[in-house]
Image (cartoon, rainbow, N blue to C red; front, side):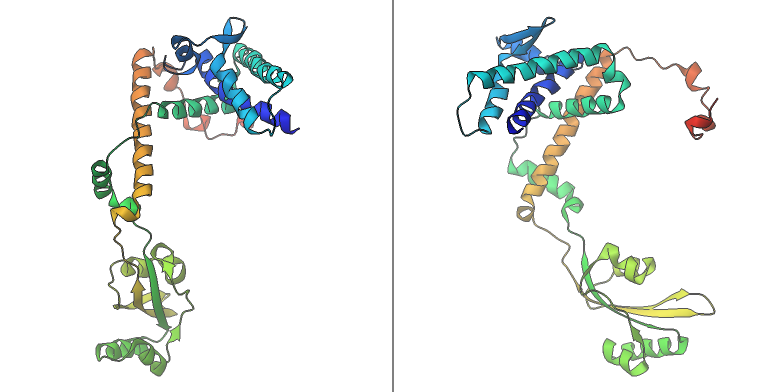
Length: 301
């Protein structure tokens, strides 16, 4: 069982590139075309399509990595047979149109091509470039603001007004609340600002976002006219919003690389569009009505 799994895994890398090449959607630098240009030679041929020596060596390498002994001749033959079988299956799948008719196959091919374009992207960059990217996109790397708050509520408007005056007079938040009988909300010590709405409501969260540490807001009124509630919130602590480049350099680098991959694929896709004969059949598109894509298929004529 273990060897069977290793043999299967060993052939997957070759299968992806072979399938893309056979579909004709890979540029010359991908797949077997590049191997042939590099003077690589096939170790087998199936209906004229070669299984390259590089693919075979890749399969042997993967197999050897999973074994504590040297590969035998039988192992090598089995590895080659896996690649041959994959090519046979692939050719048949393409012949019956599976790449077009099966949604999962189409999706996997598109995703494989997107990953393949990333192989051509030059990831090397200098610190100055990364620092400039960080400065332009700093909001992406700031951790969620964490807040620690105390919240007191009352249903009595006169008590709410008395509490407000007590705070203005310099009385401590908790002492004034205890003296006037306000009810404290049970809150975690530290919560992400975005989650504050779950405990305090959206209005309170939005106002908290503008508060400085130590400030108090209120009364925030909620509820119905017959049963109103007045809430005061004290922002006791807030985590700092700023981060330095050195603290998140690895994250910045990963995001920069991801965007380079996106740009590489977008450029490649533009080239594909330019070389493709794309025609829109407006006479068909214009016949599509709303019910055509909202009515369940079983109920269509």
